[in-house]
Amino acid sequence: MRIKEVMSRKKISDEKLYKELVSLLGPRKVSNKLVDLISYSHDYWPISLLWFLKGEIPSLPSIVVFPESLRDVVKVVRYAYDNEIPLYAYGGGTGVLGGAVPEYGGIVIDLKRLRHIKLYEEDLYVDVGAGTNGMILENYLNKKGYTLGHFPQSLYSSTVGGWISTKAIGQFSTKYGGIEDMLLGLEVVVPPGEVIHIKPNPRAAVGPDIKHLFIEAEGMFGIITRAYLKIHPYPEKRVLLSFASKSLADALESVQNILRRGAKPAVVRIYDKVETLKWFHMKKKAKGKIGTIIILEGDNVLVEAERKIVEEEFRNAEPMGEEPVRYWLEKRFDVRELPEYAPLGIVIDTIEVAVPWSRAVDLYNDVINAMRDIEGTLIAYAHASHFYPQGVCFYFIFGGIPPKGISATEYYEKIWEAAMNATLKHEGAISHHHGIGRMRAKWIRKDLGDATMELLRKMKNAIDEKRILNRGNMGV
Ligand SMILES: Cc1cc2nc3c(=O)[nH]c(=O)nc-3n(C[C@H](O)[C@H](O)[C@H](O)COP(=O)(O)OP(=O)(O)OC[C@H]3O[C@@H](n4cnc5c(N)ncnc54)[C@H](O)[C@@H]3O)c2cc1C
Image (cartoon, rainbow, N blue to C red; front, side, top):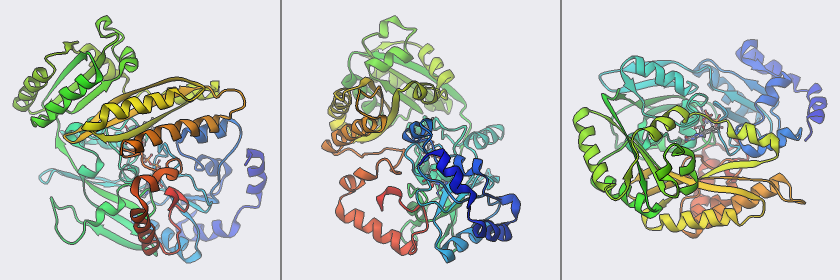
């Protein structure tokens, strides 16, 4: 669809829909302005950026609403249900797989005005509105002497509801875990407009844990309006370490042993040889090696014990000091690549997957080779950035120029196909934290299997019988 067509279509916009929603919510909370419809027609999916550059818009909503309370959200869900209108939840729009794209038009519900923050210091949790921006929440907690410990690279522009809905994870995950480890309870509006409230208790064995239904559900089961998240006292001490190992296998083994011994570094990032050149550029001795950066933080006594364990397990690697870690801390939220390279015709993206330790090196080699084998690829490299006693997440990055006769979309799809197939060959998880959205829908059945996929479809139909919520997502 070209922008010009969209503009002419817009003139015959859904006046009835607009009037009814204004009468429900008031004019300040409803927009059918073209600029808003276009802004909410996409998220941060790189392929939609490429389409945009060509003047194409994948799909346009009819209207955008900005609820300011739980009551508002209930009204919108009821209205969408009664009138069978597709309803798409929108947080910060930083999802990278098209999960928030309003494929079937209808209503986009932007949750960003739901942004209360209430701290419960004795019970160590925070009650927070689903639309709260990540950096605002973290700054607030820091001022009070706490941290959430959740630092996705999109921290400055993503929201709490988006984190839960995509099962997000942050750079300090090896200590603090992913959003699923932080979530104590939540409030969700489900069709036809019921409010589900799950209390913030330290643990509960009261039937199946319903809050898990909404983690990585990408807005398909309900609209999250608030969350109760665990917090931590602001770390007393921080230690920065870095090493250069001879091989990827050596570096991985060091981290595996650290975790087996019970130490929990906050940040661990192992770069392959290509990416080591970027992050260790100031260390000539690291060239041709595997660079690892580590941050330990928390109570002084524990951090010193962890330092000892880390240094012992990296005894065969060369210590590289604090400088590469300081450089990473300075640059870690710098995300210029995509907007800078895309207009030059370079297709770039990232693909994250998870795999047990025993298959980690093989999976890394196969995915990298598969991506490099695609004609047009200029570069393909990776780091491992989230670790568990059972395995690891690899984060692959590729960049290429589609060869003559192949469109950017075709090249992009070929690379994804290669990476997904190589991951499935090693029985890895096709996503570790970005989720499924539109982009990965093609492979979800291969990952989950027919029976699980069927169960997911039944759950969707039972909870959302009219299929108003995020219609078209995940291929469900
Ligand atoms: C530069 C960059 C860096 C990134 N780094 C990381 C990273 O380090 N770790 C990581 O995990 N991810 C990362 N991401 C991906 C993205 O930021 C996360 O997926 C994030 O959780 C999305 O949050 P959001 O508020 O922007 O959600 P959106 O993109 O608005 O929405 C994501 C999905 O959740 C649904 N949704 C949003 N809010 C709600 C709600 N209240 N109720 C129900 N459904 C809802 C949407 O419909 C959509 O399907 C990165 C993205 C970018 C662009």
